[in-house]
Length: 273
Length: 98
Image 1 (tube, chains in turn blue, green):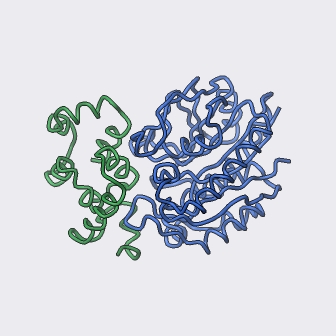
Image 2 (image 1 turned 120 degrees about the vertical axis):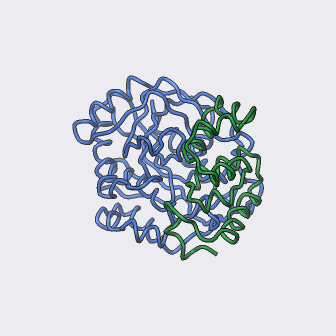
């Protein structure tokens, strides 16, 4: 069929792992909106869910770092993290190797993606799945954009990758959903964990929801690092979703800085035209 | 050093060997004396200052069973004790470091 759903959400490990330490009112409002995202995702009746993530050295390391990679396995495993720390049980997650292969073949016409037949999910995918497909009954196709180990793919390419991904999805008979997970501004895994630049986040979200390609791709990594931390590099996942829904507008379901989760918690959808 | 942490974080077999006898495991990696000591001691603060990527370090701290605040404070203490981050991505975040 084609792309039937597009959205974004945060993936910080604190969202599940440090749930008890957050202000219950804000936390529960956030969880409720993740629930709404799940509802909309389910209403789209996807055969498969592509998660565009920014993994954190669960599979890819500096010995061989792809800018873009798709999973091509029948099943995956996650989380790699300590189960109690993340508060998510380790398990197998279904994939769809045949669909992955067709997507990769289509993508290769436009962009040189890598593929991986083995892939372990970290919090970057497990936290979103915990809320969006908690029964793990939807085939997941993981996509990684390197946002951790510079040099990183330019923002314009992340957007282009999204456009290519859309073309690849639209060429398939399956109903495909797309969720990007990442950022926005944060300084995770540093002494500044919990710092959030709300003004920067809101400006970015405004550009994202308007799908303003020129504005979205105008950040330099230097500016992002300064204003949004190294975690801000993960905006690439949002740009990929924006590229896949070029011309469409978004709807913000939730945004609030939750310092103990170490990120401005975000839930949004993009219209699929 | 980062490769060791990467493999330790994701591979249960490496984890088992680390728990059984970390010295034997560490012999297989190119480590300076300081790096080796930091890993043997589980010195998260020093590892952070040395430039270990925080995502690798966060998972490693979880693996060591460090509670969140202990882990965050270990990095702060590391910067206080050993000075700013010496290499890697976080050395560019200097102006924010307290």
